[in-house]
Every structure is written in C-alpha cells, then in structure tokens.
Length: 115
Image (cartoon, rainbow, N blue to C red; front, top):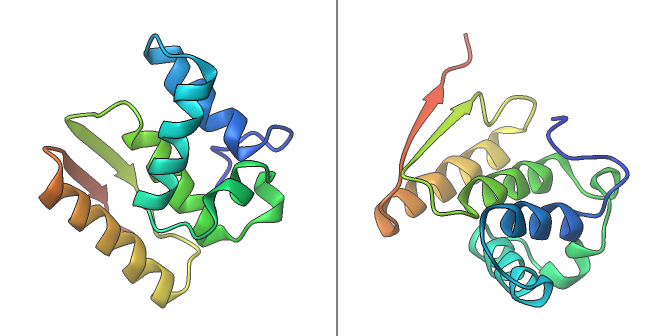
C-alpha cells in the first residue's frame, strides 16, 4: 500500500485531494476529510488526521485510501485488490464498507480479484 505519501500527514493528503478538485478553503476541506474518515469507520479521526502513514495499521491505511477515492463523489471506483495483505476480519470490514457506500451513495465499484 504505497498510495499514501510517507512524509505527509493523513490530514494533509486528504485535504489536498479535496482542495485540488473543489474550490474549498482548507478549513472546509478538513471538515469534509474528518467526515470521510468517520464514514469509513476510522475511530478518533482528528487524531488520525495528524498521523503519518507508518503510524497507523494497514487496515486503517486501506480505509483512508477508500476515503480519498470517495472524497470527490465519483460515479465509479475501480479497486485493484483492495484487501490484499489484510487479515480476514479486516478484509470483511473493507468489503462491508464498500458495499454500504454503494447502497447509500450513487457509486458503483469494480474490484479486481486476487488470483
């Protein structure tokens, strides 16, 4: 999972992703970022916003990447093995999050299978 920059905080990466594609202030982008982390079941999102990728678990990093993918309300998400290298419990959580988001939002996803 090298989608996250190792020298930038999670908060910086999420807010920059949002600000790059929307005309929002840093404060508004931060607020949206915290909401996205809550949406993908990150407990204590304000603490995680100040963390670096190496300071959090693989499952959390994967959920953060999903939050980044959702940050600009896409119609389609293509995920290449989003549960690789995660234990079975975390794999189920990730797939459950994606399915719940698909049902609630108008977003479809395609998962490339592990072969």
